[in-house]
Image (cartoon, rainbow, N blue to C red; front, top):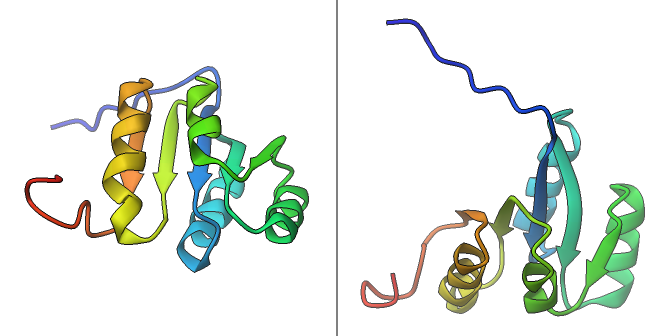
Length: 113
């Protein structure tokens, strides 16, 4: 069976929520891809946000993940926050029409998932 390749004319617009080790790994991988544009990051530490935004040339760096998602400029969101925030961030991103990549576990409980 032939492999089908889907081609996009525009880069995939991605945001990363959570700027710890996992979030930075996501950012590094996205920045290396010509078909991905890292358009926003959200994290609590101002100095870290500024440094990462400069390093990866991210136009939007905010403390509030809801602000990032509610702008509606994202095709996809990487969720790299503590586990108790996985479900609320992922649900908000999905409701905003974005695809979601969540660090494991997806949620704390099966009911939350």
